Amino acid sequence: MESWKLLVLFLCAFLGGLTIFLVRSDKSKLLKLILSFSGAYLFAITVLHLIPDAYSGPDHQQIGIYILIGFLLQVLLEQFSEGVEHGHIHSHHHEQVFPYGIMISLCLHAFLEGMPLAADQHNALIFGIALHHIPAAFALASILMQNKFKPGGIVFYLAVFAVMAPLGFWVSNGISTGRIGGIEIYFNKMMGIVIGIFLHISTTILFESSVDHKVTRRKMIAVLLGIAVALIGYYTTGQGHSHAH
Image (tube, rainbow, N blue to C red; front, side, top):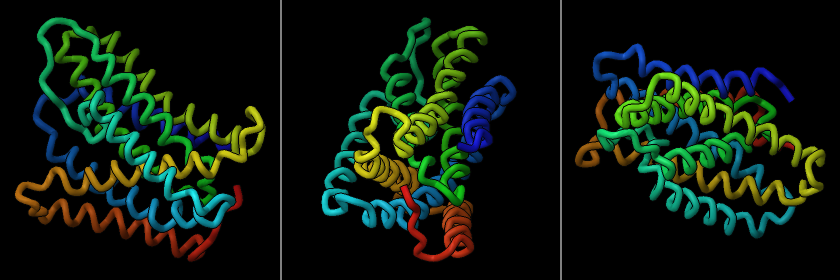
């Protein structure tokens, strides 16, 4: 297992959250462009790589059910996270109140997002997930700051969030190779759930932030760039290549 992937996942989320201490002006437009790029990239990677791989594996007749479960699971998670994984920042209390629902659902979300990396032999997903966690971490840090948390507390909870995706990668790597629990036979079904989560996250990012369903020129460029980068990776690594789990 490549340790550099763990480092990239951790640092992007952690440093992305720490920028809350450096930013004095509104960077919401930049965050939305990063989100649009990563959303389009994740959607393209899911369609080009993850779905074909899942359906080429064992029990492929049932994969659709697990994709639906993943989709609905993300709908449920967002009832508690308030859309922070999309980079949403909401005003919260003026006294120190810990947002348990946001923190727990966000950590579970990040853990699940790290899981497909065990099957990502051509590094197609790593940068999309890492980019996606930058605005999410920034939004989390912003909420903690609004809730009057001290810098030390914000840094601690950012570190907890940042370690979740690498942990998901490590656990799924152990499952896929049979090192953890002998449950590798369920790996493909777990990937189905993650695919459902990715489909929900990416499509929500792409469509929810458009006013009156109109896409700005900058957002369209960001979306097309995300898809283009995914396509370049798809064809350079071999069209229709199926990963061995």
